[in-house]
Image (cartoon, rainbow, N blue to C red):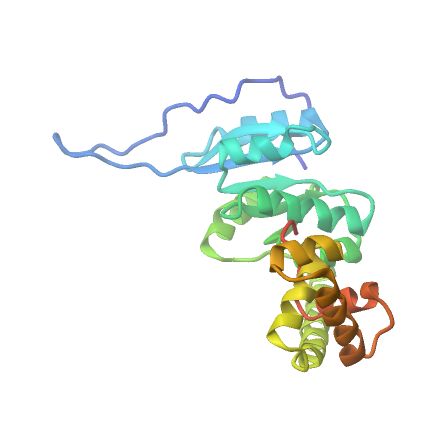
Length: 250
């Protein structure tokens, strides 16, 4: 990202925002968008902190590396409005990390700030709930537009990735609709058992939480496999996830 080289490190304290002159006895409220930077390159986060400190509406509340074991606790503690994050080298890692960030503090808006131009990663990010995919080569003005836009419900994906992202998301909707129809054959109790299976719970635990015997749970599982036309619990879970059922931790 241009203009970010050779920047000295500064703290994360926020200077007083500029306020227009107000009438005596009145209060002019100033609202900051709290931004948390997640990136393994300290030079980038230091430079962004300097650049964003010059704005009157954006406040960098901290920075952390993606592999820091305190990452999710940091998100929960700082409660940012926006989290910018780089992504891993694998699409599975990309989706998994973003889902964890989203689960740590659901109100936060996720912005991927990356050097990758891989459309598969962009698709994984969109599926995981990222509102924007911004290249590290982008201008500061574009990044500011994104940071101010995502809290308003705007989404930003480059044209090179947007077509693939939209196509894959449309296919996801179609597959979910088809798979959801398959789940309609299940009884209410069978759907509950299937959701437990999606959450990775063994038969014994499902029985305890459902207050039924293990043999009853096994009967439900056999019925689920038969109705869905699959041979194993793993296949049933795959159908369920395609229909939109997700583990609680996702």
